[in-house]
Image (cartoon, rainbow, N blue to C red; front, side):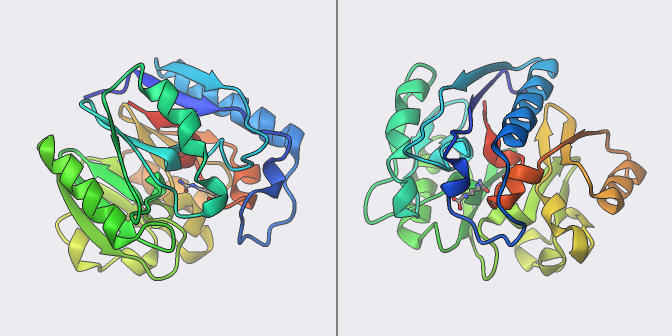
Amino acid sequence: MPFTHAICRLPARTFADGLTSSKLGRPDFAQMRLQHAAYVSVLRKLGLDVMVLEPLPEYPDAHFVEDAAVVTPEVAIITRPGALARRGEVDHIQEVLAQHRPLAFIRAPGTLDGGDVLQVEQQFYVGLSARTNRAGAEQLTAILAEHGYGCTAVPLTASLHLKSDVNYIGRDTLLVTDAWAEAPVFAAFRKLVVVPEEAYAANTLLVNERLLAPQGFPQTHAQLRAAGFEIIEVAASEARKMDGGLSCLSLRF
Ligand code: CIR
């Protein structure tokens, strides 16, 4: 089903105080705001009704809205983010999502970040990561099952989130980092494997048959184009400095 809506949140002036493991330097606020505005405008050009929420300076990572919820046509599942510093973000997203969907909740001791949740049609995959624990994954699986979706848990070893490394780009194809090229859980998919120096570009976002790809990853872009995918390049350098990718910046539904 095509997406008709998206929720984004403006980055706060404090955004550089968020969590990060990247060694790419301190991000620039003005650049981040410009890149965010361009991202919103791409979603709008694709026909989505984009709601842009106010910044939350007390939660510097709150513009990575994807982590706070998982939205399907039937339900919005409010997560319980694995990082304590981000846990309160959900109170702010739930009031917005309540206007669009019935709500369900991940509850203690479960933790879950939306970045660990990959949807491929009726099937979900949930990364077990430093942010998402087994209890969170089991709760998600039970909620999704009530609505007819399957959900498979996938242990991660290195990356922040499952979607840092594995993304569905349509036509039975996953865009993956090389660590996932042979993963048995994804054996049934066609795969495009990004070169190691472009691992960040694995977080490419499918929106209504178009791909939003982070700017500056020419080998990945060439691979995607050669495989017949149409891409829209979007600048993401400042989000990247905070471990964020293009998918993290919106909730699509
Ligand atoms: C964090 O560490 O939580 C943020 N700085 C980055 C979150 C990225 N979110 C995502 O990949 N869904």
